[in-house]
Picture (cartoon, rainbow, N blue to C red):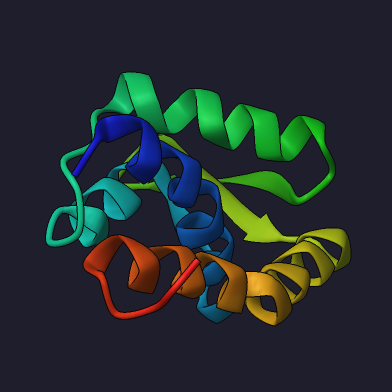
Length: 104
């Protein structure tokens, strides 16, 4: 699959993951590995963009004598994810058309 398509969906994957549990960057990379190959240089700009847009916020916690930055979804992020879920039928329609299972 084209990397741009995957990157476009990564924000919603991250919001979905954070709606289930708070997490940190390295764990998200590991969890995402089955779906798409992603590096820190891809993930962290997305997280910063989500944070800047108010969709996630962060806090720090010590873990094994190191400071780990955790991310959690905000109410605004939950609303954005809910909107995506309400509208995802449009994406499914496009995919069905590409597969030849639906007329344009």
